[in-house]
Length: 448
Ligand code: DOR
Image 1 (cartoon, rainbow, N blue to C red):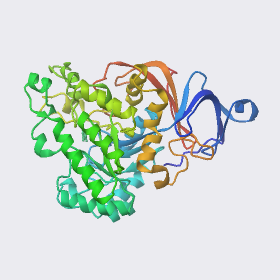
Image 2: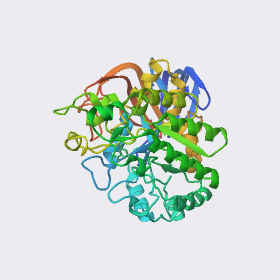
Image 3: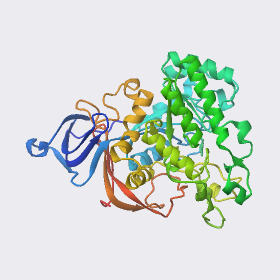
Image 4: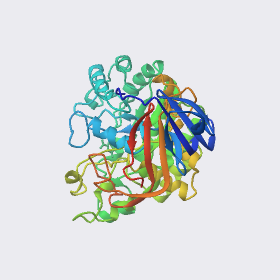
């Protein structure tokens, strides 16, 4: 993180403080000194002289959000997202720690590239962690040196965007990663089953007359990962789960004690493949809703929510994937997959709370403690209290207005990408302030 000067001391006064680690959910004050939480108690604002007071009356105060899965396009496609513009989008979405994927140009496939990008990421006001690839060039053929990548600072390994098919290679990678406490974060879609599929296999692919990507393509890939985690005792992290069958496999594996964790995106929790049917621009369908894995059916969405509710899924991760409007607003075959997610993530999660599908503390947990516990992050990055509101811990804090609404448009989005099916919609739930290590790194413009 950069060298922002932390104000000496702040009291956040009178907010509803929710901390999933300690099950705290009460109206109280938080006292921050030199980037750390010094005390949490009612009435601190009155007792402590010469502090900056942030009035959080009527607002919710939670640990800074953590996202295990973002795509910044730096290096290679800075017009889509740089590390800096990505960090701006992250803080506007309430995130104080994000994990960037290595499918840049060139990819992060060597210790030198991990070093180089981490050096630049350290200049930002939030914590940007970096994954390394599993294979050189992301070609799926030759494994990276796992130890060198870990020592260079890769927080996990992934060829995200692609599944690494070679099981023998993967077994060796798992064995090496195990001894280094390194998660293998896999994009689980089996290429031999995906073929040329573009959207979920089903009514919508049939109606649009385009090839589909089936649930099976995800399920077979997840089965392979779980098998490898069982055999090696390594840590398999399943990215962006989308299919009901996948969630059932992960649930069973966890019950058997397999070291498997999982994430789900806000879009797979809220949208089905029907989102593709709304026209956008001159097109009869919405390519902003094209992503990999694809949006699926009501049944799959319900299974994702159930998996989140019962702890099968550990974290919400955005898979923030900026692309240009020009690239996206073309025929569905050519449009690249992916949608932005950092700034809409909380509002989309809040929809589940407002629909009584999960409660607010659980939503906060899957944005904070969930990812920390899944990847043992607090210990691995050596930061006390990451993802929690712990006295003596880091003051990464997000302040939210649950009731205010905001327009999703070019003027409100900080990402360089606006490729979201929610563009021009109104969402409920606004991030009012983001504090990273005691510094205010984002403040909403007008209090709305
Ligand atoms: O939809 C997606 N977009 N899925 C991925 O796995 C990659 C991502 C991207 O990089 O755009």
